[in-house]
Every structure is written in C-alpha cells, then in structure tokens.
Image (cartoon, rainbow, N blue to C red; front, side):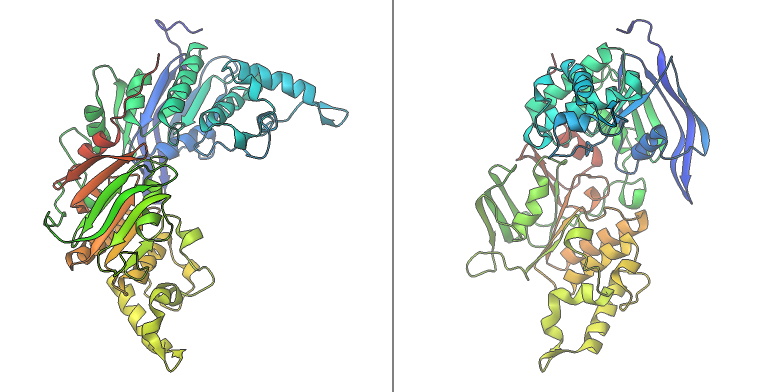
Length: 501
C-alpha cells in the first residue's frame, strides 16, 4: 500500500504537444499521476482526451514534450470503453487475450492460466465467474474482468491503470460497485487515471482532476470544494464566465429561435418505455429545435428510433398530429441515425442516389425515373447544404465524413418532412461542417417545421436549441428553455447522486 502522505509520481507528461496536419490536438499539456491515487481526466469531445490516451499507449508519438513512466518495472494497463472482451468466450479465456499464455507441450496450460486468472479476480471478489461466458455476466462484472486483465499485464507489474469511460453504460448500483473496485486499485498502490463524463462520479472518487479544453490543460488540481456546477463551468469554457458558441467561438448562445410555448404540438411521446427508457413524456412543437441530451446508457440512444417510427417502443405511444390515425408517417418524420456507415449510407451508390432515395416518386415519369430532373434537384440540395464538391454523380464513399453527413441531411430536406430527427448530427465532422449542418437545420425549423437533435454531447448544439430535454437512468430528469448555456446543460446531465463507502 502506498504512503498517501508522501505519494510518489508514477507517470508524468510534461508540455506534450501532438499535431495532426494543421490541427493541434494537444497543446503543451502536462499531467502527473501519483501511485495510490485516483486522478480524473475530463473534457468535452474534441478536447484532447483520446489523443492523450493514445499517446500513453504508444499508438501516437508526441511531437513535443516528454512522457515518463516512473518507478521500478513500471507498466501501463488500459481498459477502453468497449472493453475488448468476447461475449461467447469464458472469463478465463478472455483473461488470456493480449498476452502470451503459459504453454505446456505446445498447448495452453489451462491449469496455470486458471490459477493466475483466479488470483487476479479474487482481489475483486469475482473469482467464481472464472468459467462463465462474458455475455452472461453483468456489465460491471465484465468491466472488472477487463480491469483484472489489465492489472495482470507486464508480468503483474502494472503501476498505472487508465480507465476510459468505464461507467458510461452502467446503472447506479453497478457504478458504485465499479467505483469501489477503483478505490481498491488505488489502495494497492496503483495510479488510476479515470476518464469520465459523469461529473458527480468524478467528484465522489477522485481527489484530483485535470480539465482539457481545445487541447490545453485549463485546470489541474484538487477537487476539494468543487461541485458539479463549478466543474461543468471549467469543462464548458476556458474560464467559468465564458461560453463556447457555434463552431468553437466564444459567445453567448444566440441562435435559439424562441419558438412560442403555445405553438402547435406536431409530435408527442406519451409514456414511452423501451429497453432502458421508462415512462417518458414530451412534445415537439412546430417551428422549434428540440435538443434531447443524455450519455451513452441513459436511454437517449433509443429515442430517435421510437419517435421517428423506425422501431416501436415496448410500451407507450408516439403520435403525429397530422396523421389521421396518429401513427407515424415515415415520409413526414425524417430520420438521420448516428451510425451513418451501418444504418444510412448506401455504399454502392452515387451521392445523387443516396440523397434522392426518400423522394423518388417525384421523379417518376411514365414508370421510369427522370434522372435529369433528379440530378438537378439533388444539385440544388447539395448547394443548399454546401456539399463539396457538389458532384452528384461521385460515389458516396468518395466524400469526406462531413460531406456524407450533409448528403444524408439533403436526403430528407428535399422531401420537407414535418419533423426531422437527427442523432449525433455533428459526429465525426470537422468544425466548419458542424456549423454549416446546424445552421441549415436551424433554418429548416425556422421555415415552420421542426427539428429534434439527439446527442450525448451538448457543446456543439446548445446554441441552436429552443428547449433541451435531459435524459438519465431511462427518465427525463430536466427540461431547460432558451437561452441555454453549456454549463447549465452539463450541470443538469451530471447531478446523479453516487455513494461510495
């Protein structure tokens, strides 16, 4: 066990800079981890957290600065958000992945491997799961398996443990279990770097925190005296008084269109429940941009499919006011899913064919598609969405991620649905494309239709929304109206109570 009164450095980053072309992902960042202590790393998407983790793992090399791993026989273990576990393999089999197993006569010596794995798991009280398939244990238990595996790396000499969003998909009870495991690791003298969006958890478990903003460390020090609001303010701005507006500029939110609270309700969700969602009620009004925000595992990822009619909720009702039956008309409610590669892009077709697929009827002439009319219409849509190059005949996959996203929005905007539901609308696109997409959606709502933006990250959309609904634990926990600040949204998202004995 480490002497907490006199902690020793286990890992030190000093003035580390990493560039990718003209983009500086980390800019002179410094961080020190101490043996036996939990240190949190927080920041919005794009702040530099992932780049720092990849530098620590050796995946990237720093352009400037130094990274020092200190102590005798040091080693760094990583537990990434996806855990890198195989569900249909047992815990024991998963524990052997990523390292050279003990061998006997040319085959794996499972007796030695089971003894080794059982010893690692016993520290956390889950040794009884050794022969259970990973797909049959809880998410928290699977995360603990990944932690035990990481601690067993480097011949058992892991001195630094990096945990990337380990609680993001866990319910409250399992979260508390995992936080206790983190405490146990620290008590064993391991330096723990805890990367999380859940600010209440950070404050409950980490005595120190480093905040990244636009690749720079804007705070690194004690969490003593901090609350969710003050930490959220540091995350959302360079100083507690400034706010980050569209396209990363510092400004007060000014894009909300201030839809009338008495405006006609055109879509309503009534007591909607799903795999995670429980009894959710909300309305979408004509002419507004409604933001729905929640972290992965909160249930927010189910909402888009339900309100767009692409999936049916387990219970409850979604109603479209203009529909005679109240049921969702798939042509009147457009849907751009978060996973565009899997669920939206038609990879073998041209950009024109990808964009026109939702409105082909308008181009039919005597039973055949009038390609000339289709091409001209899509060219106009591409220009409106600032697709570059505006080449309707180019293969869809020849476009950048940002331009693919614009084409998917063009797919719906040219058919003018009453409601456009967009999941993670700025995911994987550059800062200029983000602003262009959001401005176009904002203008679409201004034309008298409605837009629903669903995301886990508020920083790029809050200035464009008239209302924000915050989802956590499967329920709507807060509703905020314009003007909305990023710090207010972050505070609302992270006020879940966490208790660690």
